[in-house]
Length: 128
Image (cartoon, rainbow, N blue to C red; front, top):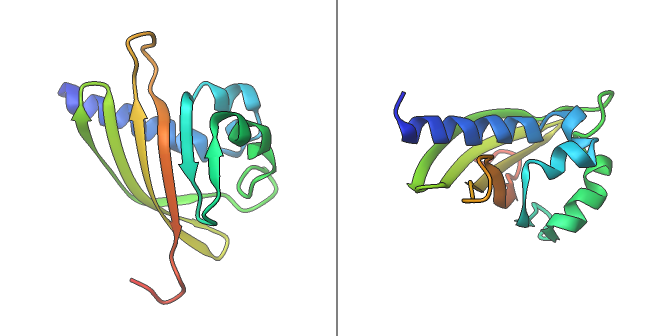
């Protein structure tokens, strides 16, 4: 496996972990996957920061073992530069389908990949 493929696969593994209800329900586990400079623009248009996301993630849909879970598909990624991966994918959560774009980075201070940026866009019913 070449370095670019390995980096993309590590970012994908992190993305999948963030969809796991056990990780979403744990501030400590989620904090290890989000970059301290994390920013998200959610499907609602709300802007999230590292602190606001960690404060509320456990209450978001997909965070309960008893509730609906994220079903990802069409996940792919590209190495943009050393230590920087861009992922795109879709999810279904209950009846809601969403398209996602995320940027994962690995800093010189850490060997771990962390989500730096995330954008979610809801897909209207019937849209391709």
